[in-house]
Structure formats: structure tokens, C-alpha cells
Image (tube, rainbow, N blue to C red):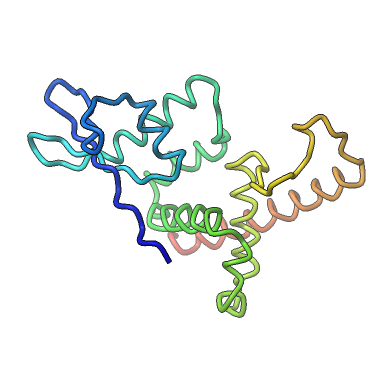
Length: 185
């Protein structure tokens, strides 16, 4: 198995210019977003203080894309994120998000191994799938997949089935929220 590539180190100068240490040139926020889209991890470090600014710049990239109308995060998800900063649930939210995106990257097939036999795994998996659908707009990443975005008409039965699945997911989410509320009670 090939050795994982080291994160790309970006240094921020006092002038706020961003410097790519691998190519020895200045980069923009959009360049950094491009590196990340290509699968590269990035670390942004303040040259003078040594502070890690990665989170700040990643949030700025997300905010810029969201403000340009390239919305990936539904209002409900943004609202829940804001709420998580003011509740005791904030320790659960980052773990849930990390697990969800890890599952997205690795693919569902790779995750079914030993975890599938854990009690409650099926319910957690369904919640994560619903979250991922909401976050990715239903994108599956499957090569050659087709759907409404390709101009194909979706059968009414399929729409009804999806609505029923969504109703079930909403019910499960409400149950999980009630349990979290009791835990934080």
C-alpha cells in the first residue's frame, strides 16, 4: 500500500499572503480549495506565531462557497450546527460529522465488516446515510450513476419510496434528538 502523502504546508505571512512551501509560490483561497478537492490535506500555519490556521481557512472556504450560492449545507444543518455550539450536544456533533464523512470517503461497503454486528449499528448507519444525503444532495459518487440531474425522469413509485424513507429517517432523528435531550437534561 503506498505511503500516505504528507499534508501540503501553506504558510501565511504577516501580509496575509499564503505561500505554498512545495511549489514556492503564493496561492489563493481558491487554490487551497482546489488542492483539497483533489484529495490533498492542507495545513495552514502562521509564519510568525506558528499558530495552526487550518480550521479558520477551511471555514472561510466553506463560507465563501455557501455565500456564492454553491450551497451544500441545508439551512436545517447550518441551524443545527449553530445550536450545537450552545448546547451540551456539542461533544456529539463533531464525532457524528467526522464519522459521517469518514463513511462517505471510505464507502459504505468497506464499513460493513465487524461494525455491522454491533448493537444499534443499523440505526446509526441509517442516520448517517440520511445526513450524507442531505449534505451531498443525494450524490452517491457511483460511476455512471444517473438521475434527475442527467435529465432522466424518476418513476412516481421511486419518489414515493424515497418520501417514505425520508419520513422514517425524520422519525428516527426525532427519537435520537429526544434521547440526546434527556441525556443533556
